[in-house]
Length: 299
Image (cartoon, rainbow, N blue to C red; front, side, top):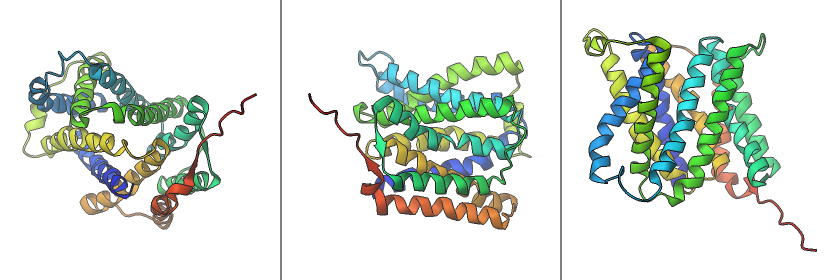
């Protein structure tokens, strides 16, 4: 489990710097087109590999599995983007991370799993840390908060779905590349509908980091980190994966300090520490965190 935890931490580190890359691209593009261009770059770079693997003509169901996963991934991006336009960054950041809480709740309802108190303690510790990281003030709830909550639900379902299909996928790279391809072909029309046509000249403006941002998001964040997620979730239970993904926030804060000079306050440091402590306890308490549901008694 330790190696796979490190692999997930590597993915969250990449996503953490993705916040920096996102700020670079948002200088010139709105969030809808930023997502569309990002995944289009990933799709274009994936095409040679997908054609080599004959991914679009094989009789197996990897296309179906990748498409379903892409719908959930698109839901995360879309509802977070729309929700963020109606609420504060702090509330959006916290509500989005509720996927870590939704995962065990959904698996309890759908798959009849049960969890020991130690796991819920880790979740509550990490979520309290997230609240401190986001300088959270939960007041004046609005439509944007509700849409962000839907984003968190999509995030939970995406992680659960990847965990369910990961062991039946021969190539995590192929699955993720197909996932990126499907997100691209869906997100471009959505961007046209919400924002209209857009020019690409700003990408090549040498005075900005827009190109670097898109290359990072399209290749490193989309193609590499999502593949790492799929590989790691072959061995790591969904609820633990969701907890580990919360380290994305401390990583983002660290990179924001290094690149933009943003400084954390005392509560932010405490919050980051609580998240890190909860993750450190995962391998220590790994065998004690979950408990299988009791089998029904025979009559």
